[in-house]
Length: 507
Image (tube, rainbow, N blue to C red):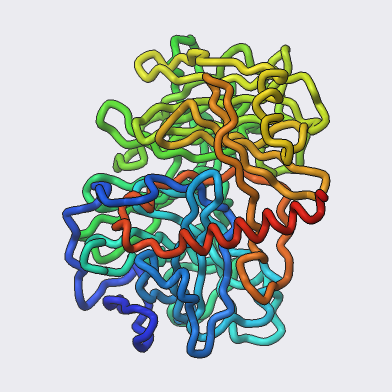
């Protein structure tokens, strides 16, 4: 499939922007990649994992409030359908949300499939996945193929160039279809024909040369001895015109925190207890890594840019923390622990636990501690920064009488201030309050309400249930001109409306 320069919404639809094929016209690489724009008005955002699908179709494909400088060029799905994205920007602790626009209109049955999901973010780019509607009748919506896109801030924000939208080529290895047959016999393909890649195991790494790497690591899946798992990786550089996935075996990790012997991950053909909670991009010693994190077993730093990746560097968690995972549904986000990284490459662990180091799950629990650790990169050892007892936390929360006295969950560290942490509090009306608390001064900062995805549309739509989740921190807006972001007022309007509805229930 040929790749051509994509266009903005008002023009006709171009050919698909498929990174897996050669293009007639090579995009000129920008010299600005990973150079933040000094005029940005929002240095970082908290991205909701749930993206919003607009209804599309007709003359008003994109609402004026989000048709700003974040609006991407038109790309295409694996079925050739045009797709455009933009970002509704809000200042933390309010949550920003990715918008997906379908110029041809949204098929009614798409309301029944999982919503598009933001997977990861790094630098000026955001990685997300979406199901793609098929025209064939009689197919279950769960059979729809899954597309992965990388959404990148515009390379020249001052002159109004659009954001880029790259569709990643599909990986068929270990799927039900041979990649060589897809162009002739299996078009369109179904989700079962693709290589299975769980979004929680996928990471995005943006490099300083304007390229990016997307990698998936499935730990301990029927691997031979001395292998950690199957490693799927895709590299993009501005000079390349053809992208493809590579699948290889990743060697078992080696400890780098002063401990002797291999880490106890139960690998090598035996049941593996590792469960990836988050994948974090990280820079250390001038090298770029993706870090796969199990919030109860440790961290694995993988050099994903190497042609033959060496064994990952492994760092255990602080010994004060209990290694027993909370009893929650498989794949559900952990509400009690989080590893975050600031823009200054400070890696910090946040834990909500009892005196024995055990994560706390009961929301009515009144005795807990919030502890933070910083990772010393030279020794890969954790150093405790601060501990907040529950009484000190409640003293800060009680300064705002709207807030419930319930267990804080899903901590998210600010990208610009490691002492500023956002927590989620769910009240008895199932509203989720997002509160900033200073971990050192123990003072309540900004407070906001979570905006549910269905509340984005004025007319409303089918509700998507939100049970609480961790958010993805992103510097995407730092690469935007301050005049390019027009959705801040829309976000404030949504927030005022939500707070008004909540206060009516509380009165």
